[in-house]
Length: 204
Ligand code: SF4
Image 1 (cartoon, rainbow, N blue to C red):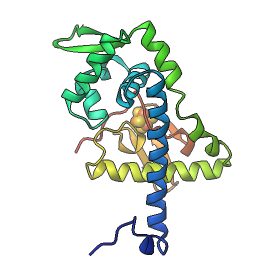
Image 2 (cartoon, rainbow, N blue to C red):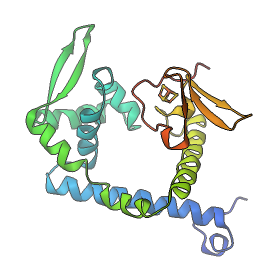
Image 3 (tube, rainbow, N blue to C red):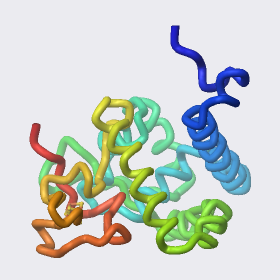
Image 4 (tube, rainbow, N blue to C red):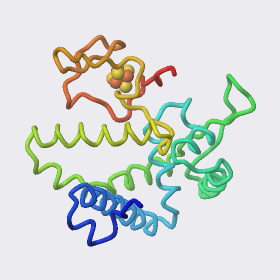
């Protein structure tokens, strides 16, 4: 039988378990910080996440169905949150001119203001990362991308827009370098994107 990473006798003898539990603590920090913001604005954490997403993504991604995939939630749950955001005049809906069965979500001026303030919620998590040197940051980024990529391939995280899952990404093993066949540029580790507007999923 497999041991749990949360079993302290096992965990204390296994660095893998300590890393897993550390990631869980960081996820908890995100939840705490997001919850703090949501209390300040009388919104739920997912409503804050929707506002920040709408602030930073293109029209074609600003739909209930896309948001449901993005946040691994049902369309009904996202629709409920969007309804409240519309009632609070933070979001407005508009029919998609290319498909009148679907609606595009836009931030209102008030919504933009709330998104601008709440999107700073991760600043405290950023601080210790800023203290690292460039090599440490690159190593951390690569390892995190590997973990996210694995979780994506196993279907745990459904939607990704990062270089490692993009059809334009090429890894050149001879030079151990990354290349973008859309931008036609070599990508240094620091250039690898986690959320790229041009991302296209690798065809399976
Ligand atoms: S299009 Fe974007 S995600 Fe794809 S490889 Fe190029 S930079 Fe990366």
